[in-house]
Every structure is written in structure tokens, then in C-alpha cells.
Image (cartoon, rainbow, N blue to C red):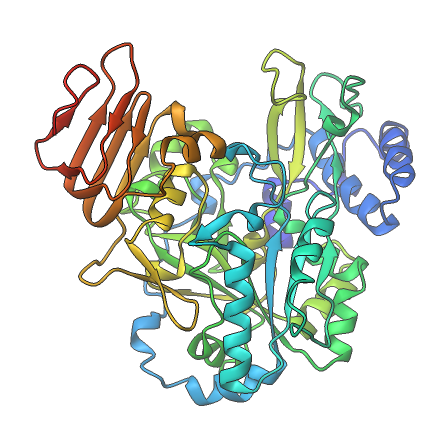
Length: 492
């Protein structure tokens, strides 16, 4: 990783403006972060990335530094070979979920993990049930640890308090940090008096590693005898602790393992796995791709694997590397340019300095990736995804795992227009829940359409409002094939 940084991102002590000038520029940031109570280690880490931005670093990783990857280990070939090793390691494994999201893009104002996911169960309810089943079946401690934000921690812990029998010898939660936004024009701290909270941003989920350390959670886990951590997003219910993958990770004494899956066109803009010329695996996000190389970045035949954000960490190795590097892992910079107020696109431009937790694959010598089936990657990023999850295209097993309906090999595609972007709007248009999608290939909904109860979609269906009045799909309607519905005829 240090070699990569030398080629693409000058380190702090190489800044052309010199240390005294850098110190003067950074002083307002240091004061602002200290006043907000951020640890000194976090302040110095932010300085590391700030120096790169001032030096003109973009964070781009060009294609000649991100070569295609072939011939990865495949979960499909494990066939139980590592199960014994996984069962032996279970007593030293923890499940770590990223739980800092508010679901603001879906119109939420609370923790996304408290959103209804299946039936009356929230994402958090299902995660807890998955953990409880693992504990009951294996006898392992299997603690659940959440990386929360200041916006999600209290409400999440309140929700967990309803589970009186959900106890463990590890912390339930620790907080991610926040970072000041940087003015694009003069590299000064962003100021937005109308809403000072908008002067700050999340530092990306690469903050996981330093937050584990500064919160004391890493030390507590190690002191309690935990050695392995399975990390995933709270909105990905397909990401459960798999004993075979744990066994592969433990038996091969790996420091870091990334679960990847085959890219489809739907994944073309997501971060992909690549390899440096020296052979080290790396992760490249689209924000790190030079604009003249976007076509190659999105070529799913060239870059065949995407990061599911399901990661496995060897905790003693993480502690050692953090100590050796004084808290600076050297994750590649992601410089995101945005308006200071996301709700006001004309507000002045700022840089958000972020890192991706998957990019740590380039930090640990011997890190690997394993190709896993898509059922381990069921992220819910938009209401399109949520409607599929609500439907009978997925069933929840006795182990609280998600499975596709019988006969399905992939979920149906759902396309909802702007009428359905916010969760309240989705619930209003589908007051009886999702239609049956177990036999659907594709559903497109355009315009102001309200669905009755017991609606079934078979094959492909497009439902469109073409008149001035909303379209109401009646109870018991069957949609599909060449059937077309509009607000003039209401025909079925």
C-alpha cells in the first residue's frame, strides 16, 4: 500500500508547500476537530489526507495501476472442506455490522436498520435472530458489534434493549468518527451557519479500523479472546457468518479476506477488484477512476469482480499494523466533490475526504479475495430493492436467512420512478405491501399508481399512469406479459 501511495498520492512530508505552511493551513481544522471531541489520532489521520489534497492529489488510480484479476478461490468449490476449521474458530469470531446509515436517500430520518425489512421484522430484528440462531446451533459466543454514528446509536441500542436475552461479553456498539468538509476554493474548513451539521461528513467506512482502535473496542475484543471479525453492512441481510468461509480464512491464516461476486451490468459503477503490477490486490472505486477511463472501469468483462463489502479481519494483525503505522493504515484517498448543502445544489463546492474499508485489502500482505454467490449480497439501497425484499420473491427461513422463492435463481427486477423514492411514498402507493413477485421477471411502475391487495405479477409487467388522475390497480389483479394499464382505461 505504501508503494501505491508513493505513486498516486504524496505523503504528508512530501507536500510541496512545506510543513510550516501546511501546519498554518491545517490549524483551523485541528481546532475545530478538537472542539468536537475527536481523538488526536483521528485529527492526525485527517491531516494526512488533507496534506494530499492541498498537494493536488486527486486519489485517482489509473488503469495501469489497476490490472484485471483472474482465477480467484471460489466458494462453490469448498464443499465443506473447511467446515471443521470454521467450527473450531467460531468461539473466537465476532459479527460486526456497519450501522451508521440513516437511509436519507430513501426519506428516512432514523437508523436504516430499524426500517421494516420482512413482515413486521426490521433489518435489526432479523440480524439479531440470525445471531441467536447461530449461538443456539453452535454454542459459540458469537457477539454482534455495531459501528454506529451519533445519529443511529441511541435509537439502535433502545431497539436492542427489547431483547432481554441478547447478552454478550463484547461491546454492542462503538461510534464512527466524523470529518470536516474542505472548501474547494481555498482549502479552508467549510462553514454553513444555517445548519452547522452540514459542515461535517462521514469519513467513509474506511474509518472502521481507526474507530475500532480509538473506541477501545479492538482491545476489548482481543482481551476477550476474539481473533476473527466478519464485517458487513447492516442493510445486507444476505451477509451471515458462514462457517466454511471462516474455516478457509482461519486455516490459511489470512490477515484479510474480501468476498467478491461476478459483476453484472447493474454493478458496473460499483467498486471493483483489481491487481497492482506487483501482484497486490486492490479495490478501486468509481470516484478513484480518471474520467477518461470510465468506459474501461465499467467493462464487466475486463474487471469481472465487485466488492460485496463482506470482509473478514484477523484482529491481532489489524492491531499490529495499526501500531506499526501509528494509526495511519495508508488507505487510498477518495476525494468526493459535492455542494456543502446536499439539498442546495447551488451551494458552494466542498471536498469530502473519505476512504473505503475494502481498500485495506492493499494494506495487508497476503490478503485474498474469494468469489461468493450473489445470495450473500442483498443490499437495500433504494425503494426498488426494498419492494422486492418485502415481496414473496424472498422467504425468511427458520434460521432467519433470506432465500429466493422456489424455482428462482435471481431476484426480479423492479423499476420505480420518482413517485416512489421516499419510504412514505412507497408505503402510500403499496398500502397492502408488495405485490406477489415470486413469478415475476420485471416490474416497471411509472407515474402515480396505487396498488390494491393480492396483486400478482407474472413475467414482465409495465404499469403506467398516462392521464391526469392516479391509476388504481384493483384487488386481486394479475399483471404481466403484454398487459398494459393506464389511468384512462384501468384495463387488466
